[in-house]
Amino acid sequence: MEIIVFLIFIAILVFLELVWYRAHAVDEISLDVSFSKNVANFGEIIEVIEVAENNKRLPLPFIILKFETPAVLEFQDMTNTSLSDLLYREDMLTMKPFSRHTRRIKAKCTRRGYYSFTRVNVSTSDLLLIEKLVREFPSDASITILPERLKCEDLDLLLSTTFSDVMTKRTLLTDPFAFAGIREYQPFDPMKNVNWKATARTGELMVNQNASTSTRQVTFFLNLEYYNPKRSDDLLEAAISIAYSYISELAERGIPSALYTNGRDCSSGAPVMFEMNTSSSDMLRRGIELARIDMTNEVLPFAALVDEYLPSTSVDDFVVVISPRKDDQFKNTLMNIKSLRKNSLWILPCHKEQMRTDEGISGVKKWEVAGHD
Image 1 (cartoon, rainbow, N blue to C red):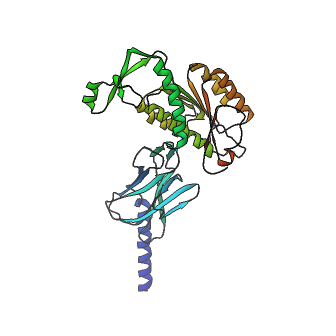
Image 2: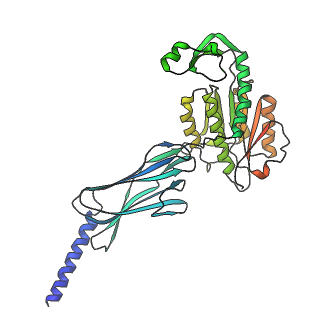
C-alpha cells in the first residue's frame, strides 16, 4: 500500500512539475541574435552575436538557441551547424536563474547582398526532460554585404584607358579662373596647383581644383539580363563587382560617374541607379545600392533602359556598357549606343572558353571570370 501511495505522490509531483514548466519555462526568456556591423565588405570576417537571458527564478536544465541564416555567411566554426539552402545553427547550454549567456561566432561574408535572420527561437524542457518547449523571437537584424572590390590587371588597363581619355579632355578645357575647391594631390596634378596653406594645415599635399568649362564624365549602363537559357548568374555577379570597382576607382581620382542598371532593389523593386557624382564619400551609398540588387526579381528590358537614359547623358561622356549578354538583340542596342556616343566601351564578363571568340563588334573588352556555366 505504501508503495502505491508513494507512486501516486511521485506522479502528482511530476504532473505539477510539468504543468509549472509548461506555464513558465519560456516566460521571461530573451534572445537576441545580431550582426557585429550593418554593412560589411565582401570577404570580411564579421561576428554573429548571441545574447540569451533567463530573467526568472526557475532554472532551465538545458536551452537550445537556434537561428537560420543565409549560407553566404561562412562560419569559421561549423560545430552544431548544418547546411542546406540555409545555415542552421544550434547552441545548447544550461541556464541558471537570472543568468545571461553571450557568444560571438565569427563568419566570413562570401557573397554580396542584403541578408537577415529568417527565424530565431529557443527550445527547452522541464527538469525531467519529459516535454520540449519552444518559443520564437522576432529579429530585425540585417547585414548588407558590399560587392567585391576587384584589384587586377584588367581593371588597371581599363582605368588607364578611361583615365587618359577623360583627363586629357578635362585638362584642355579647364578654366583657370573658376575655383572649384581643394582636394588631395594626384600624380597627374602640376605642382603650380599645390595649395601650400592647405598642405601645411592638413599635413598632406593638397591642390586647388579648377572647374572645367566642359567636364568629362563616365556613364555606366549595367545590363543584368540573363545571358543563357539556364539563367546562370555567375557572370551577372561579376558584372556588378566590375561596375562597383570601376566607379570606386574613378571616384578616388575625382572623375564623376553615373550608373544606370535594369536590376531592381530587393525591397522596393525599383531600378537601381545613381546620378552623376564625383564624391568618394558617396561610394558607401552606391555600394549599398548595388549590394541590394535582387537577381530573383525580373529586370527591366535593357533596350528600354538605354532609350530612356542615354539622351540625358552628354555627347562627350565616356559610356561604358557592362553586360554578359551578347546575343543579336543586345548587339543591336549596343550599336545604337555607339552611333550616338562615339566614346563608348563594352565590357563583356565571360568564362575562359569564350575569351577567344570574335563578337563581330568593335570596342569590346573581355573580362575573364573563373569557373564555367
